[in-house]
Image (cartoon, rainbow, N blue to C red):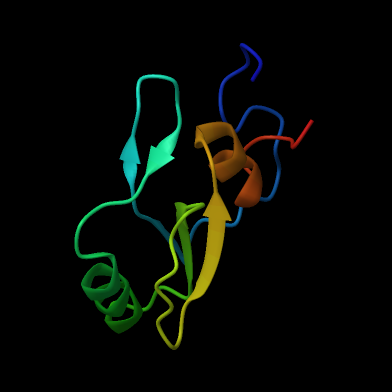
Length: 85
Protein backbone atom coordinates (compact mmCIF):
# COMPACT_ATOMS: atom_id res chain seq x y z
CA UNK A 1 0.00 0.00 0.00
CA UNK A 2 1.28 3.45 -0.82
CA UNK A 3 1.21 6.64 1.22
CA UNK A 4 -1.33 8.40 -1.00
CA UNK A 5 -4.83 9.03 0.35
CA UNK A 6 -7.55 6.54 -0.49
CA UNK A 7 -9.53 7.94 -3.38
CA UNK A 8 -6.73 10.20 -4.58
CA UNK A 9 -6.71 10.39 -8.36
CA UNK A 10 -9.71 8.12 -8.78
CA UNK A 11 -12.53 9.57 -10.84
CA UNK A 12 -15.28 6.97 -10.60
CA UNK A 13 -15.46 4.99 -7.34
CA UNK A 14 -18.31 2.47 -7.00
CA UNK A 15 -19.47 2.89 -3.44
CA UNK A 16 -23.11 4.05 -3.58
CA UNK A 17 -24.46 0.50 -3.80
CA UNK A 18 -21.77 -1.12 -1.65
CA UNK A 19 -21.61 -2.01 2.03
CA UNK A 20 -18.54 -3.34 3.86
CA UNK A 21 -18.60 -5.89 6.68
CA UNK A 22 -15.73 -7.07 8.82
CA UNK A 23 -13.30 -6.31 11.58
CA UNK A 24 -10.06 -4.53 10.70
CA UNK A 25 -6.87 -5.87 12.29
CA UNK A 26 -3.85 -3.74 13.19
CA UNK A 27 -2.11 -4.82 9.98
CA UNK A 28 -5.08 -3.86 7.80
CA UNK A 29 -6.33 -7.43 7.43
CA UNK A 30 -10.08 -8.03 7.41
CA UNK A 31 -11.69 -10.60 9.69
CA UNK A 32 -15.16 -12.08 9.75
CA UNK A 33 -17.74 -10.80 12.21
CA UNK A 34 -20.60 -12.55 13.99
CA UNK A 35 -23.98 -12.36 12.27
CA UNK A 36 -22.72 -11.87 8.72
CA UNK A 37 -25.78 -13.47 7.11
CA UNK A 38 -28.19 -11.32 9.15
CA UNK A 39 -26.19 -8.19 8.32
CA UNK A 40 -26.14 -9.04 4.61
CA UNK A 41 -29.92 -9.59 4.56
CA UNK A 42 -30.38 -6.18 6.20
CA UNK A 43 -28.04 -4.60 3.63
CA UNK A 44 -30.18 -6.04 0.81
CA UNK A 45 -33.31 -4.71 2.50
CA UNK A 46 -31.71 -1.25 2.62
CA UNK A 47 -30.93 -1.37 -1.11
CA UNK A 48 -27.28 -2.43 -1.23
CA UNK A 49 -26.38 -4.80 -4.06
CA UNK A 50 -22.67 -5.38 -3.32
CA UNK A 51 -20.84 -6.24 -0.12
CA UNK A 52 -17.11 -6.14 0.57
CA UNK A 53 -16.42 -8.97 3.03
CA UNK A 54 -13.38 -10.79 4.46
CA UNK A 55 -11.93 -13.44 2.15
CA UNK A 56 -12.99 -16.35 4.36
CA UNK A 57 -16.69 -15.45 4.24
CA UNK A 58 -18.73 -18.37 2.91
CA UNK A 59 -22.20 -16.99 3.63
CA UNK A 60 -24.17 -16.13 0.52
CA UNK A 61 -27.37 -14.10 0.52
CA UNK A 62 -29.63 -13.69 -2.50
CA UNK A 63 -29.60 -10.18 -3.91
CA UNK A 64 -26.09 -9.16 -2.93
CA UNK A 65 -22.82 -9.75 -4.77
CA UNK A 66 -20.01 -10.66 -2.36
CA UNK A 67 -16.59 -9.17 -3.01
CA UNK A 68 -14.13 -11.17 -0.91
CA UNK A 69 -10.92 -9.35 0.08
CA UNK A 70 -8.07 -9.94 2.49
CA UNK A 71 -7.17 -6.42 3.59
CA UNK A 72 -8.11 -2.75 3.40
CA UNK A 73 -6.05 -2.07 0.27
CA UNK A 74 -7.86 -4.86 -1.59
CA UNK A 75 -11.21 -3.53 -0.34
CA UNK A 76 -10.42 0.00 -1.54
CA UNK A 77 -9.26 -1.31 -4.92
CA UNK A 78 -12.38 -3.49 -5.28
CA UNK A 79 -14.66 -0.45 -5.14
CA UNK A 80 -12.42 1.82 -7.19
CA UNK A 81 -11.00 3.93 -4.38
CA UNK A 82 -7.41 2.77 -4.85
CA UNK A 83 -5.50 1.38 -7.80
CA UNK A 84 -4.83 -2.36 -7.55
CA UNK A 85 -1.04 -2.10 -8.13
